Length: 201
Image (tube, rainbow, N blue to C red; front, side, top):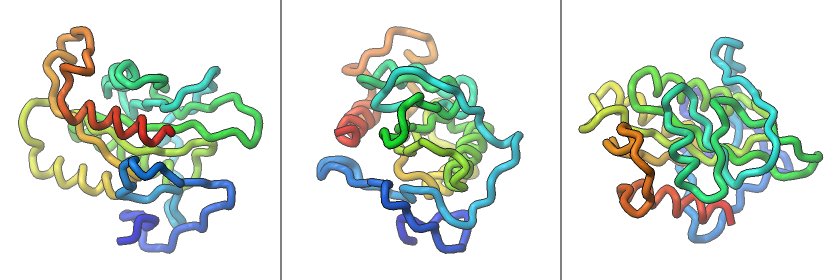
């Protein structure tokens, strides 16, 4: 499957407009899914869309929790120059021609969280969200241990519809609201931070 083919549709993708630049540094993680909206993806209904929120200031990365308790604030606190998006697509007040808001979706791995992630990915893929560069998706474990097979299969489908995916295991200290420490975080968290740093340069 080509990197610009959405796994939920069979129609060919839209051609990228000339001002879209998906060039990334040599040391940045390669995309594993589509990097731009896809042709043939229907616009989701109003009830299935995330809200938009006008924001001031800038951020290298906006973490957008697609549901409550996803972990957007925790992740934003770990990544330099990142901000939580407040569960809404950020509409940055920049003059025309400025770079789009660089967004990373965040979801828990329970069924409801994965469904919310799929809806957000579909909304982006439909082209109905403007001024957004989707960097990828972070899936944060909702419980210790391995995902049950149905959730694992669902996560696999969703991963195929976004540019990149990072998986964060269950972290007990986050549940207890203890201070977040990058150095004591699992390797997967440190790798995500390094990847996002590489993608922002």
